[in-house]
Length: 411
Ligand code: CTP
Image (cartoon, rainbow, N blue to C red; front, side, top):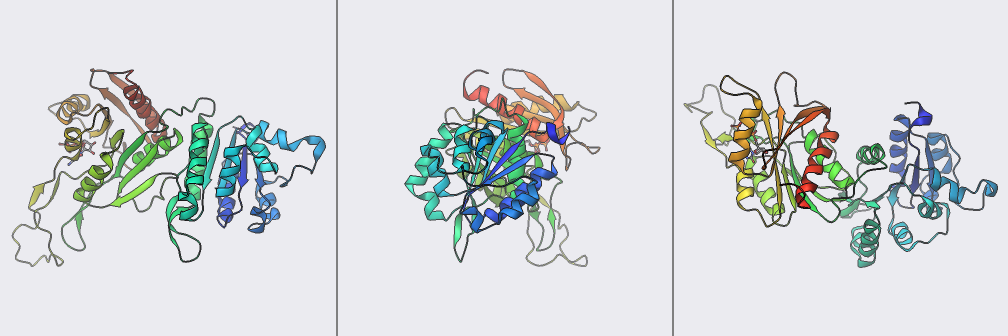
């Protein structure tokens, strides 16, 4: 696609310290070929100079409605946008947007835009949790604006807590997701709580060694991003995915062993509408975890003696609450007894989940790759093939099927 044909993004920048991270988001968008018009607030320019935004975007920057009046920028900029992205969305900006105030170019743009709007908040925990802010966020979400949950961690000064801006790389990914389906992105998970497991568990043998698997967590990440974009409240239970930054808007619980993952899943599953077990869970763990490094000259006759881990998916199905939709994943290779689909059907029945996403694995397929293909098995016997595509595309198909079940449209 030529740069001109790429969707146009308006990047609104609010007046918070996280404004400097908007530069990285801007860079990510322009490097993907998007035309970006930066519209900062006056306060944002106290943190980052207009020259920086002009140089990085290649477009002029103004904050008020009285410059270049014949071009009517307070109307045209919003009308021409394919996505309005606000980074950071301060408490003040969220309040203005919720109440339809229009006292500068950015707030005018928010009123004239008819494209998707993504607001990525950053502020101190108290400001985020204040009922005024929470009401404003609820109002905006009800109108279809995607307002992500802030990340937790170090805030300005000595404070730590919820309120950090999401990782800029993840903000760009979420923006791309919204742009990819700009006309048709459904908001059909709004108000739903989903919990997703991702990555692969590690079962320690001793302080330095573990039994693990090759799952990268990318499929779970794609599921989380897509669910956030469709309006869900997302908890991502991530096993050993340290290299991946938290998806924008998702609450991330980091775990390592199958037992830790099990406890985190049960805790979040209790009030979830949807559970997706995308993690590769070790079926076995070492029967004994050595306190000290196991020596090859040691006397332990069998340091690799194993014991079975509980099947978390089966437990979650047994503990399911009314109306809850549960999705399992199955990574299969065929063997001499059965092919991939035959193994998957047996697994689907044994697990009792509503949907089973089946991937053929081995020979470079599925693990650590960007693409995925497979089948989606439903309890009514439907076996829908999923064409080879990105993990985001596969995620969309999974959420389409989940929404069908939540709405009672499918069996
Ligand atoms: N799973 C789980 N707990 C386990 C093992 C697997 O919750 N102890 C879940 C996985 O997260 C996945 C599904 O069960 O959603 C299928 O995982 P898979 O490894 O394909 O199946 P297993 O039950 O381990 O069967 P096998 O390894 O014998 O094929």
